[in-house]
Length: 488
Image (tube, rainbow, N blue to C red; front, side, top):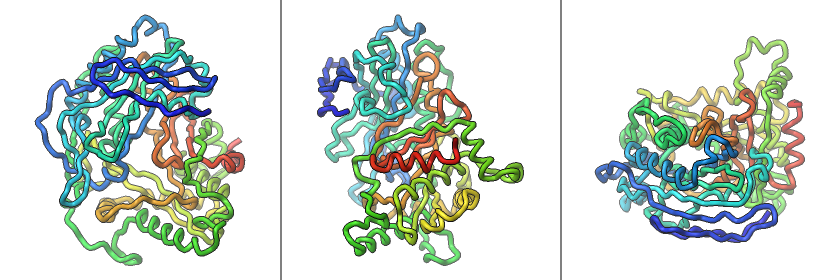
């Protein structure tokens, strides 16, 4: 489906409208209200120094919650729900005060800082005649989801970009969507989950108002700031000192990509006659893997030895996806391929980060093989490599990773050889109770790196996992075949 350009008119407590062209499948989404939301209690202005981990992706990341119509809130007006959300956000921003600030560029070192200036978040109300049932399978991404989110125009000046934006849309059937965009420089996944949970609790729509937060929020980056870790010379590659494998592997992939340009116009980053997987034509596809399918794969991989091996669903599915994606993209046998996945470092640091730490607390773990080794190797062997990479994340690894990010940062070219996985299974966003009960689905929107594979809980299958991944249209059938093999 194709939509023309869409625009939100900015304003504060002013009624605004958004007109879009639409195809025959979906009616227009019309904005009725756009307001700035300030903290209920203003915090003294200050500059919060961000860590290098916060600067990896400063753009807004979006998730949309979809709630089917319910008799519990059918008599509530959009204005009533909007008012409750606004009140709850004002209270939440009083505790999570950096979320009401803006990013600013430090002129001395060119790094991003967080200016806690109480400028506030943006909250939007909208209506559409569309019915949620018309959207079909909510686990499958639809371009229409993007029009349920407020997208401020970004002209390159971070100081003008709100760090939290949200839109509540009432559907023609009486259902609702609530979309939230949060700057990745502000929160990582677990912190975003905690923020949204606090906001939903403070909004008290059809629920009793939540109590005090379990942990006091800690916004200062503390030991994650390079200057607080003590600068040391990074050990040379191949030495016994701790290095950040993820950074080393990325550099090797980039060198391989540059060298690959000498192989001819049909060779891109080691692939055979396929366009690169990073282009803008990717199709976002969700594969639902039931608990039974995952257990079946475990049985096929480990057989009667299952009781003597500890293997998480994440580790096994990450290995399976890596093998399927690499085979689908036809990467040269001799080319280096890499799997990278985020690891929560809150309890990996010495001492551990405090409970309630709200910043980015993750690094990438990395496994590298040749495409031939990956294809010839067993699932079991690949799982063991993933375990080793996960277990290698230590306090020293975090320091090396953080220091490696301290230099000038460039844009990583998209690569068929790089498979990225983000594990959301421990963050059941659909359970965040903004309205009455769980959302029918909580869907991530298009991200700056659309080829990332998200592992998510399925609201209707507690033991199952939904895998969302960006694929080239011409590879969709092949990937589906390779990925679903051994799962059915």
